[in-house]
Every structure is written in structure tokens, then in C-alpha cells.
Length: 473
Image (cartoon, rainbow, N blue to C red):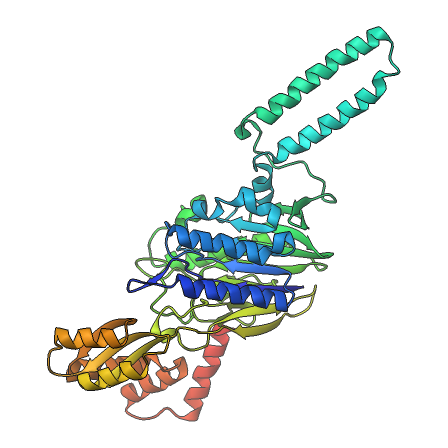
């Protein structure tokens, strides 16, 4: 089975007042091309579909268009979970329309897919009505062989049945019970052109093209969305460790549904400790990141698809847990690595085959640093035909005139901001950018130099690399 892993679309996001919807639509069109070309069976969208709880109508319209194109009328399963930017209620609003198209949306941790199916308007009514109509047809065929009195009695019963059917069709949806349906495991529920074999709180077993898949779903697990599961936690020194342990317990309990003859996968939207962040992400907790240790990720998942961090990266290679990253560059420092989606090929009991498919970056976000206003004019003129979002930084000790700013914007109207830099401010920014561009091993070496006033020897660097590998395993 082939699945496509993506996350952090942030539909409706602006860049200093500039809309990114056109670029987001281009990405979705490219994603659909990839899904079709590689004959993908399932698409996982791991949260932060929207950039805000109350997205603009055009962003919602784009999301529904994406689901329509990706699902191919139910041929392909599409599963979406909420992220910390999403409103769970808003995200699941179209469920009555999506399930028949093979689109599953999970808003909060612990959602039960069978309960969701059983509560859909008209679903139970149609089943009951079909059963009753079948019995009526049988009664009608029997009338011809009945004597007059028996005929009258059967007609009375038929009228009662007909009245009952009419009441069922006309009654409000909430008159039906909320309990899970009494469906046999062999029959299951139709999800598009595929079947839900069974499901419960946070898991589901699907049959896609004669392959069984057990999928664990943990939408963004904030304290509020987890509800009672975290009421015993107070904000002390053990709070973050306790939070991570709670997440580990949830995954551990859900993994009991994995089997050796199924493809076992998981999806969530959370921050795994040690992940590489960028400034375009909204921190999950105001007073510090709610981090989950890699040890508390699913142990037996063949592939765990994650959302939240905007750079594609492994969360834990040992646990086969990976971030897809955002499809668009939402800040200048997200230029590396290139934006991508993950194509994953899976079979029961085997390791996943993962391919990163790089996406087209039609409109990159860049920082331009120039010396003086004249160089700024030249830079804008040379790039006037390029599609690029640019932060223009001008090194100058003189104030910028409004006429200079107007000329710059006339040469290049998609300049995000124009920032004058004095000599002292520029040196400070240069130092900051220098450290931000170093990887963790280079940062350690630089730290060692500053503390010890000498370079670290090979043994020290090997020891640090070994500790780092163990921590990130």
C-alpha cells in the first residue's frame, strides 16, 4: 500500500498582509498530481490545515476543493486530524458530506469513528427504512393468496408499518440514539469505495484494496482537548515529563489494536523534543513547548506521520516517526531543506520505504542585504520579473527617505518590508544569523571554543555525536 504524508498547510495564512492562497492552490494541484502519478491509496494530513480557528471563506473553499480532488470520488482514503491552529468543530463540520467520499476527519483526541458514522443524518434511518420496506414488499406479494378477513388484518398491519416509516423519514436526526451501531466485523461500514472493519476511540481498521490497515489517530493533544486525562497534572518541575508520559500511555494503549497481519501506522500533531523549529510555527504552550520524548512515540508503528514542525525531518528513526514539514516556505529560514511530501510504501511486517518528493517553490521567501539605497534600487530592478517575497535590509547610517521607499516599491511591489540597518545593528544580526545557520554539532564546537578557548579534540566530538545519536534514536 502507498500513502502520502503531508501536514501544516496553514490555508489562509498571510505574509505581512500578502495572501498566500494562490501558492497554496498551486501546491494542492501539485499534490494531486503526485497522488495520481504514484497511484497513492491513502493520504494523511497531519493537522494545521488552517492558519487560524476562524479561517477566511476562500481558505475553507480551497480545503474542500483539495479533499474533492484527492479523494477521487471515494477511490482514495483521505484522513485528516486537527492541529493547534485548527478549530476541531469547524474542521469536522463537513463530515456528513465527506464520509461517503472516503474522507475521514478527526477533530479531537479519542474520537470514535464508529460513533461518528452512527450519528450521521439519515444513515441509520436509511438502514431501518430499507429493512421495513423489504418486509412490506414481502407482505404485498402474499396478499393475493389471503382470504378476505386475513387480507383486512394484514392491511391494517401494513398501514401501521407505513405510518412508522413515514415517522422515521420525517423525524429529526437527534431522535436516534448515539450508541455505536451493531455492525458485524465482516460487514463493516462503507468509507467511499473502501470499508471500515472496526473502530474505537483513537483507532480504526480499514480495508483498502484487500489490504487491512490499523490507523491510530491522535489529533493535537492539548491539556484542554485531552480533557480529564490530564486533570491530575500541576505546573511543577515534573509537568512536562508527566505530559510526555501521558501521551506515551495513550499510544501504548492504542497499539494493542495492532496485529501482525495488518499494516500498522499512526498519525499525530505534536512537538517531539529535539525537533528543529522555525519562527513561523506557533509554540504549542505559551510558557514553554509541551514536548513529547521520542521514547513515548508508538513502538510498533511501521510509520508514524507527524505534523507541527515546518521543516521535514525525522522525529525518531528508531520509531519510524517523521515530520512532513509545511508545503510552503512560511519564513526566510525555511529555505533548507527543500519543501517536500513523503511517499511511503508499506506491507504487513516490513519496514517502510520512504521517498521525499520535493515540491516546486514558485515564490521563495528571501532576505536581501545591500549596501546603501543605490544598491537597493539595483537589486529590485534585477529581480523585477522574479516571483519572490523579499525582506530588504539596507545597510546605511542615514535615515531612509520616503521618496526612496516609494521608488523601491515601484520597482518591486512584492517587497515584504524595508529595514534600514546601522553598522552596530547589522553586526548583531550577522552574529545571530551565523549561529542560526549552524547545525547542533557545529553549535557545540563553537560553544566549546568560547568556554575553553580552544578547539574540541576528536574524542570529545565523537562522544557528543554518540550522545546525540542515542538521544535522537
